[in-house]
Image 1 (cartoon, rainbow, N blue to C red):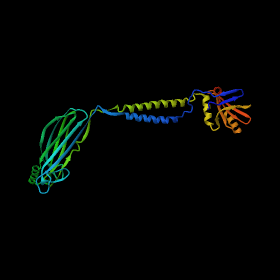
Image 2 (cartoon, rainbow, N blue to C red; image 1 turned 45 degrees about the horizontal axis):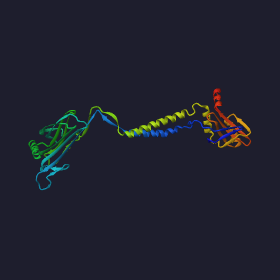
Image 3 (tube, rainbow, N blue to C red; image 1 turned 180 degrees about the vertical axis):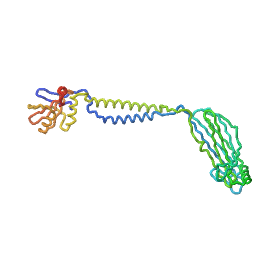
Length: 365
């Protein structure tokens, strides 16, 4: 409503006055951007904090095997040794050199004692069924090695040389002596025993066929590469970025306050005020017929006071002129006027009359 509008009623002049602002057109759609801001705040909080595990110790075990096949002097190979991933002619093999590496690491300093050895096992099995063992013997090539964890770590690196012709010749003699068709194999094992916080026996193996024309070396460390945990783990929240966390918290708090204000004003926008409800409903439902007062509106000599807004709509239709709205007493009384050719039709919406209708149990306006 324009602040300079006035209504002249005979010798009375009604001017618009300021009243305390109260949002009466609050819509719940205002909550949508506030919800988006809350999501943004939640995202900031999520990025400002982190989760870490406490009460448990994580550890990891890794095993690696490398080897070289040293050759006898021959007219075919220029190299002194061959690396992994090949087939080797047994009669040319002189030394099998194996390198074992065992690494145990933990995120805390654990008290662990360890002992390890390297064992050479020779085994003869039936060719048709490898589970049937005909002969087996073993010897310790390295033993009596002990130690303790250092800052939660065990590092074992050992190399060993195997006189391949010796073992190969022994198995040839075995097969020739007994005349059996069997598979022969030399297996080198690094055996690590731990005691204390972690009790286990870890084995790394390297298998080399014997008494064959060609040799295919097989390494087995699959079961050794693993992780473990000691104790019961609990998830603890910690502050990762305090600035991002504070920004997120402020966004959420402000958004919640504004959302509460929107909901409050939406629920109480009329405060059970029949006058405000009726005025809001008229202006909303009949906005295409109503214009706000602008400048000075004069009341004609012939005035008809209509008792309902619907009667005023009939007059508006008859005179074919818009309904002029002016709140002459803000919060208490409004005029809706149709100025015809010779007659002024006026509908008065007042707080007093609306309260009277409610008291009488009648419909408003």
